[in-house]
Length: 332
Image (cartoon, rainbow, N blue to C red; front, side):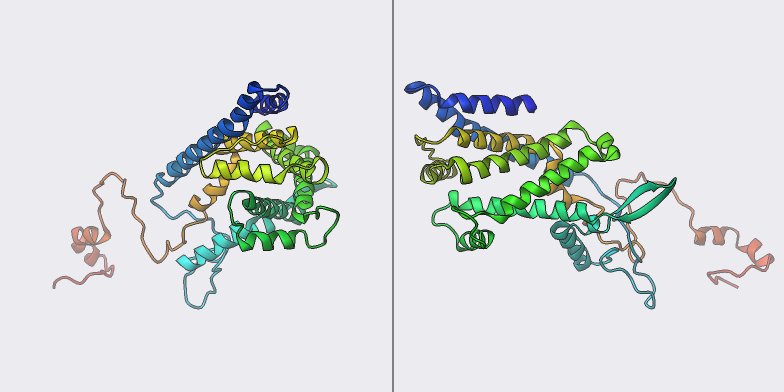
């Protein structure tokens, strides 16, 4: 994927160099063919993985239990950490998806004077939450390039994001937050030897790719400047399947677009697909009602069992002779 990213950037740089028909053909390839191909890979790959997870049988309730299960009336259950109802499960999932509740409760262990010291790890939670929410706001702001007329909530969101009116054009806070939080997550992987040992190159690549997209977008907005009218013509044409290839877009825009296409094509094959997988995790989306309802595996091979009632009936005379009380009175 690193080679793909580098090749895409070099192709984007070379796209605007030639003049005449060659330049038009290169722009059509980079601005039309590549985005459609990346979108097709993203949709097919993402749907395939989600459907594969959805078809995986889960005959038993295996939710993560982090609190008291519902049992006797006088014992207070943990309705969020160990939900026994559908509403409790929905609330738990909402807190997990929107606020990263399990990460908020995460602890870190450090070795101090040959003793393990457990402490809070709120910096990781704050950086992850800020990074994800900032990316969501950035994606929603880009809807103004894909739809016409622009929805009111997109305009309102952009106004709140640039509330402080720093510079011209106004500085978006989510741009700065996303870059800072992303760099913190990257430096954390490098500095901590345990995390560095567990991290593989794809873990770095996804984060570097997101930072490169955010950085190139900020460069276009605040330094090199891009023709937004031409960009919107191109985006609307792609969204309506009537592509238009405008002239005059900068090389930085081509790099930015190729990085986005690389991310879209890489997304279904990476850990980033957890954005859909979190909703299909049986440790989160199931209610823990094992005490109130019996769950039988429908794929179990039929086995002849010997119940207690059958055993009692078989040895009834011997049990009575031994003076052991019987559960079922038959008889005499």
